Image 1: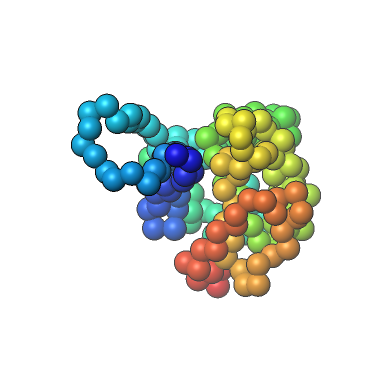
Image 2 (image 1 turned 135 degrees about the vertical axis):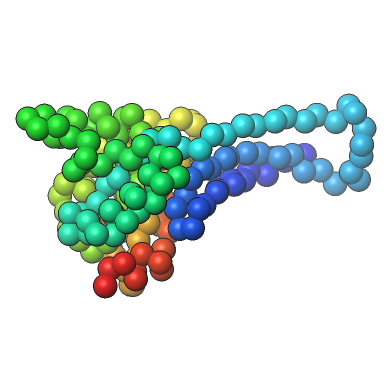
Length: 173
């Protein structure tokens, strides 16, 4: 009679393209085809807009991922393509983060030392979660890393899972 919480995440290669959070109620009684059993359906869409946060020292890796995201139909919000000349870049980046479905954090030792990456993830972390049961940034910030050992993760991001992508390590050479 208690709900079981779950998440189904869909990947194309190493790139996450969609995520669906759900709950199911589990009981000890035998399964039945009784039409009075309650069922609910849930829908989810692929992400449409992805904000890429990264250190410029990691540009070759990020460009490869951005190309893959674009090839499968995403609008990638990335500074070198999206910001206009003369624009207040800090204000513009916050607007782009607000407009995105996910905040793709490319985490590396370079990113860990970048004050600009820190400003972006701190802003994303303070964005209000769509689900009140979720912690700040959870479900929105999607960190990936490719270096071993894992670059230092700030305490305020430690509650978010950082996904290791070995395939990206090969692009770093």
